[in-house]
Length: 286
Figure (cartoon, rainbow, N blue to C red):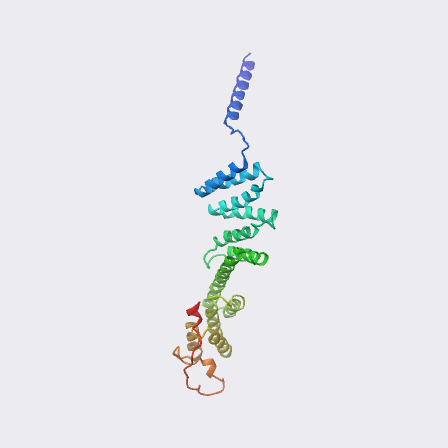
């Protein structure tokens, strides 16, 4: 009897719990696509980015074949980006690009993906994986949609990513130079000159190569490198310092560059002659 009573109590209790659980679950109601999309846009404008992303996802879930579903996919990614959730944004953007490679908003999807990586670029002393991914994404955008309005800004950011990667390579080269690993340092600085020649790091890279060659006792190689530095960056302080390292004396910025007057055979170099600069030094017009 007691066992039967116990079973009855347990059964009744389970029934009550199930009923309560059912009452707590929100009732699913399908809403018009316009209402869902507009509500998500309202959340976005109010800065409620998490709620906005959920709202755009709901548009696609309830109306997957609506024309607004495609737009909602992209807007959900934008909401994640605004919320600083770059990984979620990238996942959503990759899905959009895969499903709609020829969509009119595809250029923007590539651009926004590049921004997600770009916003995560760290100091040159740290890993540059995000810089490389941003570079690759912007290059893809420019290659696939060169006439897109987003390609113009992508090119600007592309130059900045190149400069950042060059800065990282310079950081490694300087470390090798300080440690006395001159050949390794030269290889790093040459990589900057060869791969990132248009960046602001090129003058210093050439100067550091001069330093390394002199440390190895390779005077002729140092002079040839300094000549390249002087020819391309005559107004640079890096050139002036390189001259002092090679010749062991100070010069005035207005003196004729040593590589134009030194012939390698004369016991004494010719007298310095003042030269006219036809255009402003690169550092004044950069």
